Amino acid sequence: MSTASREGSSRSAATQTESDPTTGETPGAAPAVQDQGVGASPRKRLSWVPSQRGASAAEQPAATARHRRRVAVLVAAVTVVATAGVAFGDDAIASLGHDSPSSDQSVAAGELPDATAHAQAVDAARLALAHAQQTLAAATHVKAGQSDALQASAASLQSLVDDATSTAAALTAATSQLAADDAALGDAESTAVAEQVAADNAAKAAAAAHNAAAQHAAAQKAAAQKAAAQKAAAQKAATQHAAAQKAAAQRAAAQKATTTTHSTTKAPVKTTTTTTVRSTSGTAALSRVPSGGLACTSRGSGAHAASAASLGAAINSYRARHGLKKLRIVTSSSLVRHSLQMANTGGIWHSGHDNIVGCVSNASYSYLVQAWDHSAPHRAQMRRTGISTMYIGDAERGSWLYGAVFFS
Image (cartoon, rainbow, N blue to C red; front, side, top):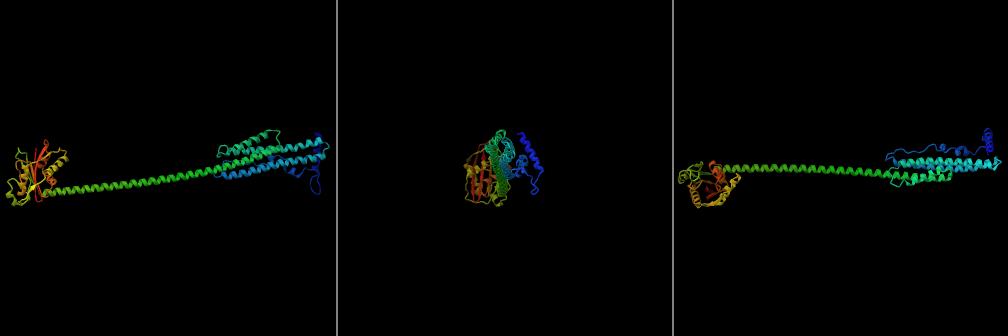
């Protein structure tokens, strides 16, 4: 076997120095396909190995497409290498058979092309395994179980690579299956990335819409609060204005009642102190009013008893405003007769059984109480403490109201 090898080497050396002058080809040289690399190492034929780099979510679909094309080229190269290696083995056996007189020598020489095809298939399988590992490492978005097929194919091919008895055809078939699973996982990763990008964009759009709605709601709430505050301020201003107008009207009415009211008061029965209020009435009525009294209006007739309960209620209301207790109201017949006499006479004076007497021109009980309140002696009588009852008599004639009260 060693002799055949040496002879083959001598023959090859001879053919390298001799050439056909007409064609320029070297006689006895190996077929042209061998010179183009069929018997060369697959690392030289597949000098470029695709590799994956970290791609962004937007670049993943394009990167996956390039990955599938590269895997297809790799599979085609492996298939060509294995097929060419087998063909080369047949041609080499036939060629060496003509040159070698021994059948043992031709078999020994034919083993070299088969070993070369096997080595090429192993190298191609290792390249495909390396690429599959990169694909598995980059498949971070696929669902659980989607990478199982590629892992199984890689394990199967790796076992064939590790098995020295495996054939080139078995290696080629396993490499093709690995490439198909590699491309399938790349497609799944591309789809998962696209879905994740769509989900992220939808989430961002939903968050933006939520924020916009929240801002709109906050703006509406602020506007409603502002409007409510303005309305409350306007209502408060209107209330204050109305209260001021009411107070002004009450002051004007009290001043008017003061100018048309003539009253006098007398201390309790046991005293003789008398207080009078200046009268603006005509002097004609004074001749019929007893000495010490005051004229309210002209003399007349037709006076009638008024409501002692209404006058008493007005006095109790006045006392309540000043934190004083309510007094019992009793209608006094003697004070009613005195009030009728004052009304028909047109003036007021003390009967000796009263504390305060008075008259007003508008027949108003509250105005009569206001008139007494504007006089210190009358005010002191209405605000007395240590009493429980007030005896009242009152009368009306025309628009005038006359009253007499005794506190006890």
